[in-house]
Every structure is written in C-alpha cells, then in structure tokens.
Amino acid sequence: AQKITQTQPGMFVQEKEAVTLDCTYDTSDQSYGLFWYKQPSSGEMIFLIYQGSYDEQNATEGRYSLNFQKARKSANLVISASQLGDSAMYFCAMREASGGSYIPTFGRGTSLIVHP
Amino acid sequence: EPEVTQTPSHQVTQMGQEVILRCVPISNHLYFYWYRQILGQKVEFLVSFYNNEISEKSEIFDDQFSVERPDGSNFTLKIRSTKLEDSAMYFCASSEWGILGTEAFFGQGTRLTVV
Image (cartoon, rainbow over all chains, first blue to last red; front, side, top):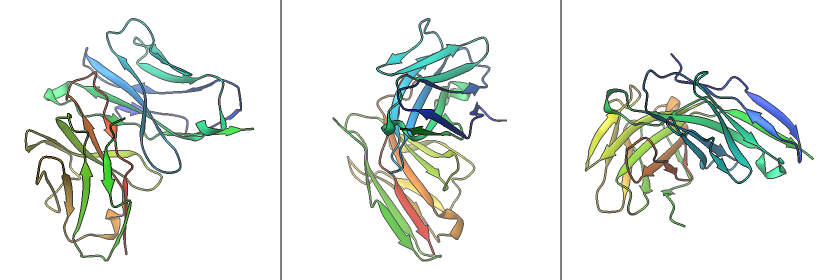
C-alpha cells in the first residue's frame, strides 16, 4: 500500500498566485514526521519544510506553509505568491517509527509549472 | 552552508560493468542513505547506514549492491554487473539523527546511464 499519495501528477499556476499541492499519508504510528522536497530540472532534492505529528501549529517557511490536517491524514504544501523559479517537481515524504525504522519514504511527486 | 556532495554527476557505463558512486555526507551527520529515482518515477529508498553498518535496506538492494564507508568522510554505493534497468538518478542523503524530526539533506545526485 502507498504510504504517501500525491494525486496531482501536474499542476499549473499563474505567477504570483498561490497553489496547493496535495499529499495524503498512511500510517498507524502516533509519532511521525512529514517533509516536502523540491526537485528542479537540474535534479537535486531540496528540503523545504517539516511538520511533526505532534506539532499543533502548521509549519511555515517563508512562502511555504504546510496545511496539516491530522484527522484526514493530509499534509498539503501551500506556496504563496508563486514565482517562475518554483517550477519543479515536489515530493512529499514521511518518516515513521514503524519497526524502529525512521527511513523517509516518498510519494510519486507533483510537477508544478508556473506560468508568467 | 554544509552540503552533501556526490561524484560523478553523470556516469555512463556498459552493461555488466561495475560502478562506484561516491558521496561525501555532511560532516557531523550520523545517518546516511542511498535512494534512486528512475526517470520520471518516484524516489525509492535503497539503504540506510549508521555506525559503519547497514541499518535498513529495501527489496531493491540485493546482492548486486553494496555500500561502504571506506574512510571518515566518503560513503560509496557499488553496483556490480550493471543492468540496463539500473539506469537512474542515484541520490545520497544524510541526516544528523535518524529520528522523526530530522530532515535528510540530499546531494545533487549521480545520473547513471547503463548502455
């Protein structure tokens, strides 16, 4: 079963608008961590933002915020005021403590294209 | 800012040959990982390494693969007898701890092409 589900293979947004990238996850653990990474066309993986399962407030990092809805098991990434440089693949990932392992597992990614 | 460094950035090899992908994790990090990403597909976990031994590995990480930390700084992934389907981007990552709240920092990746 998929641990991380990203249902949007591709998203388009106009420059300066906000966009939400969806991520739902599956875990029976009470303690887990959720991450978003950006992968531009150059290929590197860039860490964006982290949300812990016990964090009561949604994480924010500059223009990135994480809309964490624990009951729905969703951790959507919101990018405000999109910029052309935001065009990239975005991956949601999770660390969970099952079996003593904390290995980050990734979703299939969402390709974001920002139009001028 | 400290970063994970991978070399080479691109490697082309003939089927059946052995390749070694190299990584220099961030110096104070204790946990190291290899992931691969076949073109256009998801990022797949291969192996994690802690305290000079493998702590976890996936089904993909079979006898064809091995990892080593030959000195205090390098972390290598060896792929023996490469196959066409090994063509992928290979990412090394490291994290300070292996706990939930610790982000993994990724290198730039090595694009392996098996011909």
